Amino acid sequence: MFVSKFITSAKIIPRLVAFKQPATLFLTTSRTMSSNSRFEEASKKVKLLKQDPGNDVKLNLYALFKQATEGSCKQSKPSMFDLVGKAKWDAWNSLGAMSQEDAKKKYASLVDELYHAESQDKTESSAGDGKYEGLLYSAGKDIVEITFNRPNKKNAITTQMYTDIVAALKEASNSEAAVTVLSEGSCKQSKPSMFDLVGKAKWDAWNSLGAMSQEDAKKKYASLVDELYHAESQDKTESSAGDGKYEGLLYSAGKDIVEITFNRPNKKNAITTQMYTDIVAALKEASNSEAAVTVLSGKGDYYSSGNDLSNFSMVQGDLETAAKNAAELLKNFVAAFIDFPKILVAAVNGPAVGIPVTLLGLCDVVYASDKATFQTPFSLLGQSPEGCSTYLFPKIMGYSKANEILMFNKKFTAAEAKELGLVSEVFPHETFQQNVREKLGVLADASKNSQIYTKELTRGLERSTLHKINELECQRLVERWQSPDCMEALMKFFQRKSKL
Image (cartoon, rainbow, N blue to C red; front, top):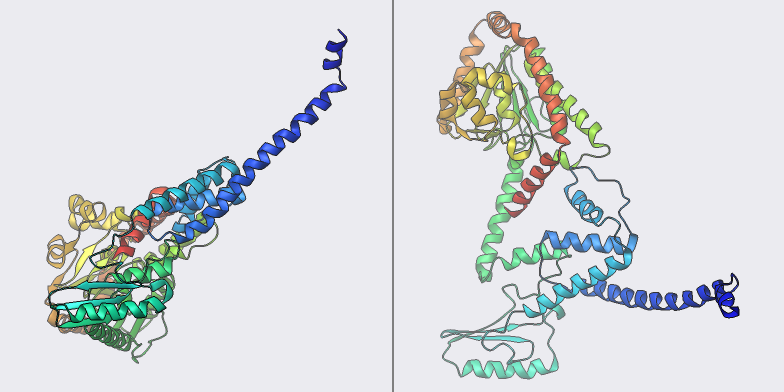
């Protein structure tokens, strides 16, 4: 009984607890030190990996590392347009309440697995490799290649290599080959770590040239530099009246005709955020001029490739606010076309994509080169139509054909667009500019007031309807730009683009 009381007394329990705690603490500390050691080793080892395991694995590594070092994700969710940031956030956040200890273990295990797989996957030595220190020796019937093979040491020559190079040259002299080549030439450097993104991109580019001779590479390099230099010279702003006034545009005002030209040929005349504002200003200036006709065209091969998707990458702050601001900008932009009082001509000199296509329904006349194409890839980008096209395109070409271009991303040729009623006339590309000027001359010679009043009668009654349609389209886009499927579609687009 005394023993029983002693064991269960209030005084002895703290002692027992105090005895157990150090033991538990010791074991926990021991295990923690072990996992910490593995984690630190893995953090160093991961930098030695050369092969790219794919985005999913890299995101998993990132998430586990963050969880191991900082704990559960407490950061704010990035904008959906910050594609890389959001992918990282999603990966980290998906780990939930996983302990830092478990994250360290999983991180170390994953790195070990990758490291082991890469070690197994090392390229086996081709014939002759390993025969000579720091060299690759390849003997063909006509040519022997001796290649320095210490890329991580900048191919520095060791003492043994001096001896082995002599031996390799002797072997080459005794072979059937008439020519022996000593070179660095083709990419022989080790593939950089998958986390060295810049280094890996450079390595991939160099390695992709394979066995291209140095002579051919020099020629191609010179040709490419000449091409870039020529393109840049061609792209300098011309000195016609008004140039430089508006970003990405050439503005030329004559007595009878105003010309507004998309002027970003090296970017396929993609429309930047500032250009949306400047096009509105240019149209306002044109409406206040003496000219009765305003013509829109593109410089270079493209009419316009539409919205510059780099606009999305510049979105900052609250996504909802950014989407609403963008919609307001778009609404004002389209409204400028709806309210333009004079004759508005589109001279589509080449491919048109997205909003430059949807706006054609608001133009009075559309001329197209036979090399022009028309496409609105809204569903590919998770977006919805704009420019009052949801109202005007079915009126112009019927619901079925309108759906093909607005819903199903179909690309139409100039001839098909003319047959549908979207294009007024198609001219041969070689004579397109001349043919358009002849047509504009006829328009300019006609009575200005007659043209303006006729436009008011044909368009005036539905102007209020067009503004309502514009409002509805922009409201839908506010929702689209914030939606997960829009973000995913844009991510896929950028991934496809990066592979080109």
